[in-house]
Length: 154
Image: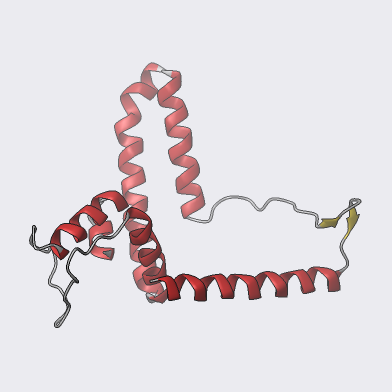
């Protein structure tokens, strides 16, 4: 799936391809691991592909994640290049699209400036450091439980 994403396919296209391969209606684009067999009537949704992709990216070494970041950056640069004719003419929709692409590239590369966030509770009173730490621990536990639940659903 990571390779299919690297080819520029979206999750709907990946889901369709995997479902077709699982049903024996298409040839796999990459070699399947030895012993992999799909159950009769196998289907996967775009959402299921997205969840599996995110789990795979969390397990990937930092170098593989950096490679995906490089590929996505190159794609975003191609998009900006493709928008150049409309930008030169000053067409507002093209300018808006370019701004969105540049914002996405900035976010992908971690170039966004940090936003000031003040943690408050109820009546806008600032949280104490201890209250903030307690809320952080609670959020981490909830996230871990949700992640375990997602893995059990697969």
